[in-house]
Every structure is written in C-alpha cells, then in structure tokens.
Image (cartoon, rainbow, N blue to C red; front, top):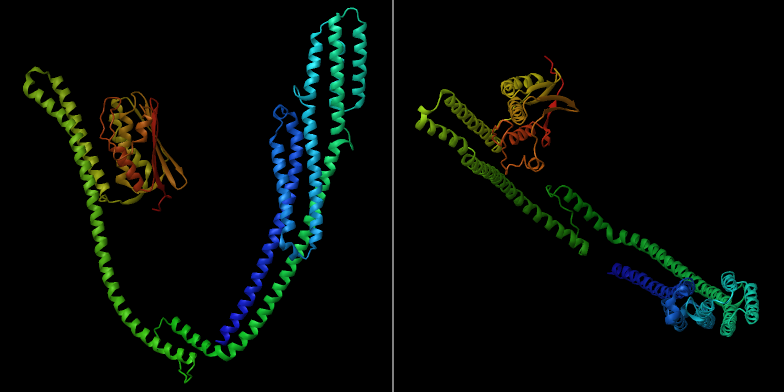
Length: 614
C-alpha cells in the first residue's frame, strides 16, 4: 500500500505539471495564431490592393458599376485584421506572457492607425481612379468623345488632331509633364489657327473652339488627377499608400516578433521545468525501486523464477516452491501457487489423454472426409463427361449414320439403277462417314479419359526427329491426294522428355488438320527449334485460316466447333482441345496464330533434354 501511494503521488505530480504545461502551451498557441492571422491578412490586404491596380483598373465593369471583387475582399480582410487586433488587446492571457499591457495596446494602436491611414488613402485612390476612367468611362471617356467630335469636322486640319492624340498617349504612357505642356500649347495654337483659317466654315469654327476648350479643360483635370494619384517617385497618393503599407507591414512584423520571442522564451522555461521534474521523478523512482526491491520484491523474484521454470517445462515436471511460514501476501501467494500448480498438472494429464483420443478420432474422420470428397469430385467429373458425351453422340453421331442409312436405303431400293462407278462412289462416301464416326469415337474416348483423370501419363526420353518422321509417313497418302507437300525441317539429334503416345496423338491431329484445311498444290512445313529448356515444334500451312472470333473460342470446352476442309472434309471438333490438354500434361503450351485466307501456324513446346548416354 505504501508503494502504491508513493508512486500514485509521483504520477499525480507529473500529470499536474504536464497538464499545467499543456494549458500554458495552448494559451500561447492561441495568441500566436491570432498574431499569425494578423500578419497573414495584412499581407493579403496589400496583395489585394496591388491586384486591384494590376487587373481591375483595366476592367470596364469597375468603371461602369463602381464596385469590384478586389475592393470587397480588401474591405473584409481589413475588418478581419481589426477584429484580431482588438481580440488580442482584450485577451487576458497576454498578461501570462509577462508583457506590459500598455505596450501591447500601443503596438496594436500603431498598427490600427497605420491601417486606417492606409485604407483612407486606398479609398481616395479608388475614387480618383474611377473618376479618371478607362476607354469610354470617366475623364478619358470624355476626352475620347471630344476627339471623335473633332474628327467629324472634316474642314479641320486632321494632322494636328493626330498630333494632339499622340501627345495625349505619350503623357499617359511615359507620365512626363512635358508632353502635357506640348499638348496644351498645341491646343491653344490650334484654336487660333481655326479662327484665322478662312477655309473653315463659321459654324465649324465655333464648334471646334468649344470642343478644343472642353478637351483642354478635361485634359488638365486628368493631369491634375494623375498628379494627385501620383505619376512619379515620391509624389501623390500612391507614394503615401506605399509608405503606409510599408509601415503597416513593419509594425505588424515587429509586434509578431516580440510576442513570438516572448512565447518562445516561456515555452523554453516550461520545458526546462518539466525536464527537471521528470529527471527528479526518475531519480527518486530509481532510489525507491531499489529499496522496495530489496525489502519486498526478493520473494516475488524467487516466485517468478519458479513460475518461468514451470512454464518452460510445459507443466510436465512435478515442481513445487518451498513454502514459508510468512503470513503476508507473498507467503499466501506461494501457497496458492503450489495448490494451483498441482491442480493444473492433474488437469493437464487428463487433457493430454483426451487429446490423444481426439487426435485419433480426427485422423480417422479426416481420412473418411478425404475419401468422400475425392469420390464426390470424381462423380461430378463423370457426370459432366456423361452429359457432354450424350450431347455429342446425339448430335455428331447422328449426321454420319443418317448419311450411311440414306446411302443404304437408296442402294436397297434402286440397286439395279446404279452403275458400278456410282455404287463405288456411294461406298467411298459411306467409308468416309464410317471413318469419321471411328475418329469421333476415338477422340471421345481419349477426351473422356483425360477429363476423368484415368489417362495414365508415362513420360520417357527419346529423339523427336524419328517420331515426327513416322507420323508424317502416315499422312503422305492423304497429302498426295490433295497434291500437298509435307516438308520436315528438324535437327537429327533433338531429345525431349514426354509421353510418346500423347505426342503421337498431337502430331496426328495437327497434321490431319493442316492437310484438311490447306489448299492443293501447296506445302505444309514442320519445324523444330530449341529455345531455352524447351523444344518448340511448329506446323505451318497455307490454308483457309481461322476467323478471329472462332480463334478466340477454339479451346473452349463448352463450344463445339467443327468446320469443313478445303475438300469438304469434316472434323470431330475435339482434336485441338485434346492436343492442348496433352501438351499441357507434358509441361508445355500450345498456341495458334492464324489469318483468314493466308494460313495457320500451330506451335507447342516439349521439355528438352541432353542426349542420353547409351
């Protein structure tokens, strides 16, 4: 209890210091945020004023409506700066920074005074700028209307009018008073010339003198406005505005620097106090911990050592702690631990016995489940194969048998009406139909064995070239009937590891397809090439090719595709699908590249090996 109370007091003291430090930091942060808002918004006010003169003075909408988004935002930001300054002056926590309140008020009032002067100058410049005008507005608009009226007096000297406009532009662009003086001199001289010029009509003279007088008066007003706004360095309202802006920025930055510096010093003091308290707490805790460990924790350490030894032995050893006669908490804990250990050892013995029984039962149950699952999967495969076989038998076998039956019906009823050649023709067609049924049944048998995993894969090592040659020989007659040349391009010593029966099936189907879909009087080329750890076999024909949409579905087991060859041969629709599965069972891949009307290239891979030792 004494230990608990001691460390509780330490925790409360440290927590109180941390809370006090956090509270002070929060107040300092609030003051800093207000100051940063004042500084940032001050810069924004100056930036908006510059944006107004850069963009809005050339916007006709400003002169027409007298309002601007820049002026509105400028006013809002000035109000926001005022609000933050008044908040800062009235903020009680400023006193926590040990800064004289009078100093804060003085600095804030300096900023407010400069801000008021700045805003007054800005308002005057805005009003004078709008009076000065742009294009058709203000004084510039009046001057433009006077010059347009002078242009309509055709009896006047238009050269002088152009010179007058040139002086006006030079003054507006260069802001040099000598151009204004030259314009005034030209205007007065032109008035005299108009009166003395006999070629100018009387009414035009009166009109021209009035226009020139009004134009000169308006121009002088514009010059006065320009001078008032400020057309040179160190003069006019623009100079005053810049001075107020510089003072405002300088005063605000100085004020922010003073407050931030004081806040940083206080934060450093807070941190030093907090660090000192933490160090003192740590030192005191270490001293007290050493004391309590020697007086109180030594029995607990011994108990902990026995507990670790018991845990490490997985409660398998009959361990017990020597009990003491002490009636304190540690003595009671030791006696209770011994009783708990004996009970746990008894229960663990029972649990181990039950666990062995459950493991044996689970093992038997898993074996039954595996057999049941394997049987279920095999039945599902057989069911799928059965459905596919029934669908194919009902569709693909019916066509050749119908053909055979039709031929037989014709021969039975009209045999006397046919010649030997016609009967031979019927016999050949029936032979082809029977052969197609045989091919289909053989492919179906092979496919069903593959689907049900009953087809045994027996790899062996052999030379690939003789196998290709033997299969090509089987189809030389069929190729010769269509005047097709079978060309073999293989290396004599190319050894692979594969199931030879599967490879024979693949080569026979691919060669049969190539002959079936190749045009007469062309070639079928068989290539082999070693690439990495594989031998690539390619069969290239010059045939009808495969349409893109059919090529995308050619290996889909749900879609049964069968097309006629160049001599109207019929296929089973299962050859390529079986070829792909046989190649994959041998660890390779089968790919088809084809272009309709050009030809087809079928490629597959087999694992390459080095030449076996005899």
